Length: 423
Ligand code: GDP
Ligand code: IMO
Ligand code: MG
Image (cartoon, rainbow, N blue to C red; front, side):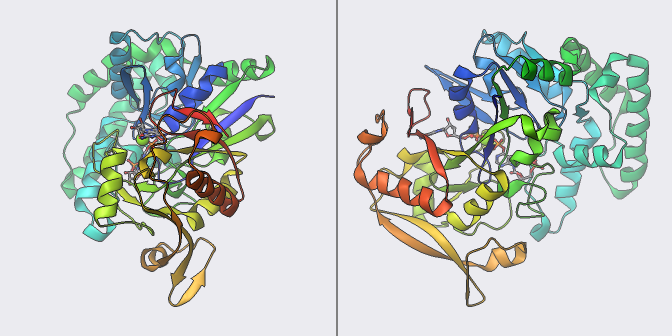
């Protein structure tokens, strides 16, 4: 059995794309199982940089089957654009499969995302990527969504599209939401649907064939555990299960087929969008991490909020995900620091708390309790093995693993494929 799941341990942008690309050397199939084009997964190959939003990061390895699983919400316009851009850059997309069970992000979902954010009280804004993710999952759960399989029958698709578009105009028009020009919207969406139609298939069949043939399969998570709809900092989360458990329903894979869970963890913390950030550094140190780490959103370009590594939150995340191995990324970003800090507990209303509080309002008022360690003040970017890391960097990683009760399997010291080694 060789099905592995890779998930983000924090608030996303941990470097999942890079690690997927590295692990794809050994994988024959890569599957996205949740989220949509809210994701931005960066892969650097030689001098080239690719940012993937919907297409699995394995696509850059010729010959790897890439599946957009049923748990993904799919914007046909965004997928067409991404495919065209890859083709233009010489990437073969012929091995892409789109699950016929994917729910579709339709134009009204994007308008609703923007409308809800605009109307929200400032303290309630989520700071979404505006890609229509929440509204599309809402339609899925409300059992009114359009699925990819409907694209295979134009008349059926068009009728459902027009019905839902009209319902949007009737419901939200009077509230001041932007009205949808249904004819124009349909024409645009249908052009994209025709483009992606040849890739739509029953992915459960091909995935199970691959499992039966004992092929190496990698499930690529998007976002991170603190954005999980159940386990994240609700309501400042995304609308899917970003944790490893979500991979099974999102790809149609039974839990017993999974043999390994990888958790990607950044050596510090970042967050894009609103919501509590317990170890945020709203100061020069945070600014230094942002600049050195190039912490600007791969999807929206927004500056990412930065702070120290939060052990309390990451321990919760490692437990929920059942992490077998951690891939620690961006260690090099800490290279110049005199000291590095780990948040080992929170102080909440005068009490020390070591378990991750469920109450987001409590999270917003906790004070982090830090353990400080000396920095290493040496560049790690050309390290090729554990022994080449400075001693204080080794100490930091060992302490992280000890506090998280997890094994480190991979260490990343730069954005390139080669800047990666096993522990
Ligand atoms: P993802 O969403 O988890 O795939 O992560 P993003 O691609 O949004 O953000 C990670 C950023 O860090 C990208 O710009 C990567 O090229 C870069 N990156 C990944 N690993 C490392 C690393 O070890 N060191 C440095 N300096 N950059 C890295
Ligand atoms: P990757 O896969 C970081 C954040 C948004 C917002 C919240 C909800 O690249 O790690 P949504 O548009 O999903 O309704 O927004 O989730 N968010 C991400 N933050 N990385 C991502 O993806 C994200 N996808 C969504 O900023 O706070
Ligand atoms: Mg990202």
